[in-house]
Image 1: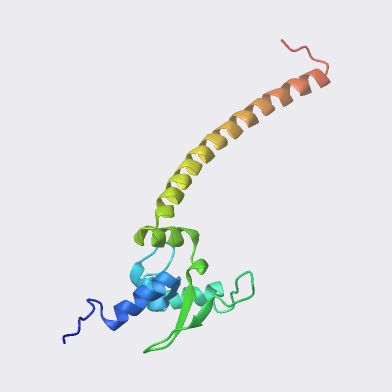
Image 2: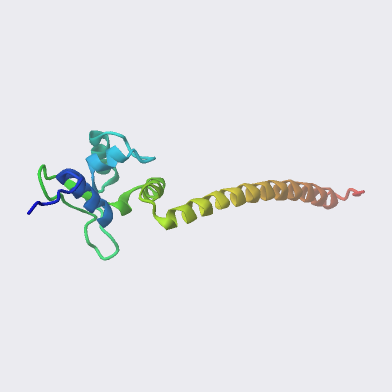
Length: 144
């Protein structure tokens, strides 16, 4: 009886399982080249140290890092520790259906933010004009 072999090597299978569970090592994060994260293992490790990932806990107080199982050991970090842009990029790479919705919502929010800033500028100009008119009236000058 022949045994079928998986097309993935042991390391690839472990990485895939970690990805599904939402935990990544520094090397895995570096290999993904996510926005806002360094592209080297050492860079990601330094970033994790700077950002305090080793002390981070979730809402229930559970640590957001864990010992990596398998050869080499080390640490794995929860995907929730990643910057928002990196989380979105990761979700897009994993073909998460919600990622496209999030991406389009962010684009729409950026457009609305631009429109809001324009309205704020117009409002400030109007306020300056009304303040000038008010000052003229307060000085007893006639406003035409």
